[in-house]
Image (tube, rainbow, N blue to C red; front, side, top):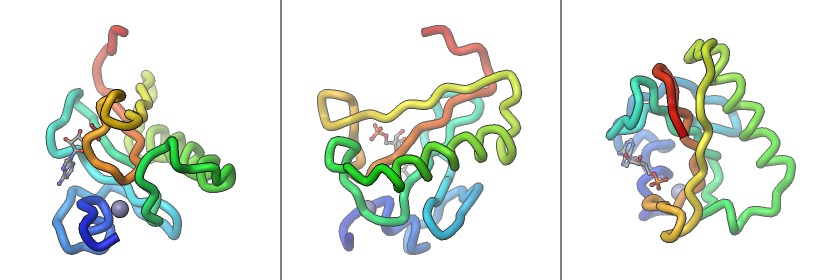
Length: 109
Ligand code: AMP
Ligand code: ZN
């Protein structure tokens, strides 16, 4: 999608702190980290919000990649938090589906 910030990051048109990429997903550092480690994992296809997505295979792939990135790339052995904000009421600001991985400190609820 031409005017989507995260599509531009995937295309390399906007720089990012990329930490992982494969055929299906792209992962990069959040520009305003809320924890010592704060990474966003996004599908390469443009999906505006979780509420718009019924693709079980894609959602399954995304969650498996989140696990791989957290455990193997970021090495968050002590644990981490996974968050998806959905629509404005859920705090979503960028309308390209993204999964937050937060870790590196104790995260009280
Ligand atoms: P959300 O509120 O769930 O839509 O989260 C959007 C996230 O994108 C926020 O945590 C922002 O800090 C992050 N963000 C916005 N622009 C950029 C950017 N250019 N590079 C990296 N992260 C960004
Ligand atoms: Zn997009």
